[in-house]
Image 1 (cartoon, rainbow, N blue to C red):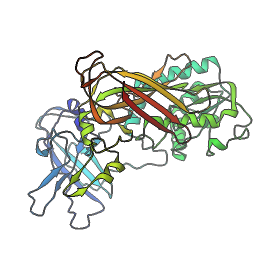
Image 2 (image 1 turned 45 degrees about the vertical axis):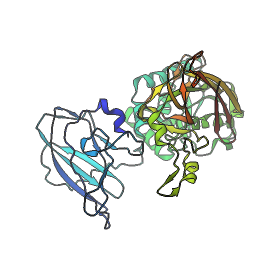
Image 3 (image 1 turned 30 degrees about the horizontal axis):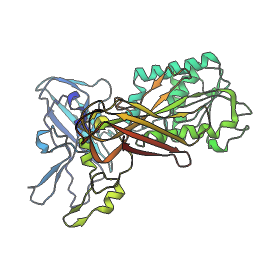
Image 4 (image 1 turned 90 degrees about the vertical axis):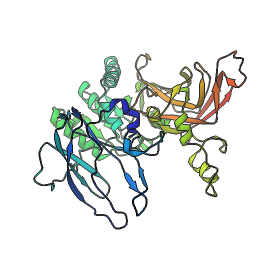
Length: 458
């Protein structure tokens, strides 16, 4: 992750120290272990180990390049840049207490593609312990953001209340979990014992089912009511649902492996709901009920600079690179919308109110959508782009909404950078160089899942 983004939340408890050294002049070992004695420079709770690369670029060792966060003094890093992230290894449990000047041993092991750590209060007798976590098929590798979502009490309460509201109106005889949500499958199985639950787990597949079984055994659940279906929903018939109509179709929506994609990639749920349309009961409940496409104009100086188009460097023409990577700037003709965690994008500032530009109604089959909204600037500054995301309306009463906006750290937003930044001003300003608002137009094509975003000064 970008440790610069959480600088204020980090307290350093030691000076930087070397763990491994790799000589790229020869083939590196496929496995290595070491134990390092670390002296605490402050008191606190050790919750994580942050590591990065220090690269030696010449044979003499006079030129170095660091990928450390810029608040590490030895890094020599300048301004924020998004192309270097750091590795954060979280210590299991509540962490390890450490007093100033106390020593602790950090055991590290690396394989071909991974490094793992383990803290020891005393000198380890041997480092021959395999620190890499291993497990059976019931072990799931979820992104840190997804784990954080499941650990968020407010999010869990929102989903729980939405499910309870649906079940109070009617106990479904058949419920389908359309996405990879382990949480929803367990929740419905717990709250509606009489319901038959069909899970798709399009990304997790067997791992998701094995995990469900492990959790069910540990918590006294019965797996008898849960059925895993491998068949794609587009090919379902009444025989696949045991000649039952679907009373409840739900999703978070969350699709395993799609964490790094644009927010509207999760509209896959709408497409799958449409494929199931002929099998839904007349009063079937759909959750989420709606998706609201939100937009906000923002100052994104660091992000815009990191995506700025290249002209000629050392005599090389980079025009092809600009088009391929979606650069912005004078030499680019408007780049694509890209996914980012806004809170990790360096210096950012909201310059407008948040407006809804489009609404997706999941109670109806998927269809082309268009939207148009006027984004009026409420703050002066330089607008570098538009930030878009989807707020999921979970219930028919529009009372439970799960936002995935910039103030939510667990979701990526879509960013449409401007080819040329504009000066944001207020309506009626005498400064003719300022723009008071932007007109944003969007269109969604269900045939390819693409969202086209256009904007112009109003």
